[in-house]
Image 1 (spheres, rainbow, N blue to C red):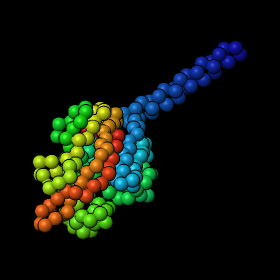
Image 2 (image 1 turned 90 degrees about the vertical axis):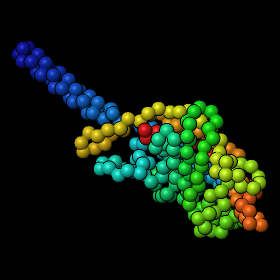
Image 3 (image 1 turned 45 degrees about the vertical axis):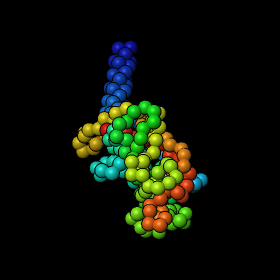
Image 4 (image 1 turned 90 degrees about the horizontal axis):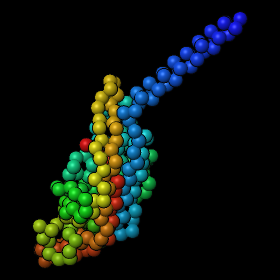
Length: 227
């Protein structure tokens, strides 16, 4: 009888170990993915435009792939030179406040510290704001935000559309791959940067493009590195 009880005990222990191994295998199977927080805040004349999310709820990326929920509000660096900040759907889980808009930041020589970046503001929000402040009219492809600079005066192409973006953390690489039928990502640390100051958007004065309409703007991002 004691031998039978001992046998059942051994079998029970073996089954328990087998179950633990299976669970461990399942966890390891998912270990190539992880979660990462990301966010950006763009404040323009006091109006706050913000998204904040985590990759467990979806990936803010433009490519479509089976098995992944893609969020159209983006805070990501697609390459070492480009950061895309975008609100395109206020119903998404990572939306916090503000209106639909897009800010593209090109960092040609990414370094810790101040980087002279080319910046593009896109969307009807900027058209409307420009018009209300006396810049180009709403709907114009040449709205005031298309030509801005950090100094008040006649447009200077060598200074135009550039901001000194301060990079505080370069982040680290994201590793991506494919385990059929699903893609996977192992996210690196976010790329972090900011700017806070006054820009001057443009209008024509006596036929001369002049940047003299002040706009207070701050940009702060913790962007997913998708490279």
